[in-house]
Length: 157
Image 1 (spheres, rainbow, N blue to C red):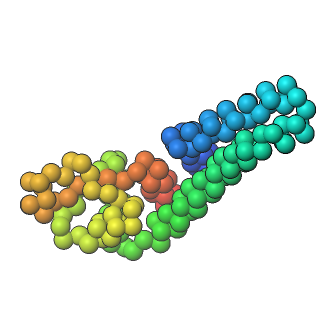
Image 2 (cartoon, one colour):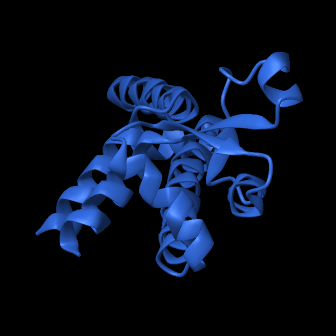
Image 3 (spheres, one colour):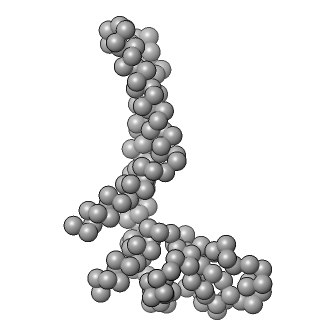
């Protein structure tokens, strides 16, 4: 049941992304235009004279499907990577859950944090200023989706 809820939350995040909403609104506008045109004439006339709009509608909906599949695929790759993280990387990731924070501090000597940042799991937070970098301290943040996954994984064990 928890996996189903995670999928629904992921779908909600995908639907509310600006790019998806733009493509969806364009597709709906084209669809409404086509429905209006079909109402004015028969469907054969619409297919013959408005081929470009039908093609554009198909491209928009195909774009929505492809975008969704790439998002789902990237989430599954990320989950697999998080589940198979090295022990030093898991120590870094567990700090987020232990402190119940989406941003943590890491010292310069922790290569696991920079490895996770290179893979896009973590990123250098805006809180890391020039003074912190000079002293060898870096603040790393994690996305809300990854943070929820880490908390759920911690609760299971």
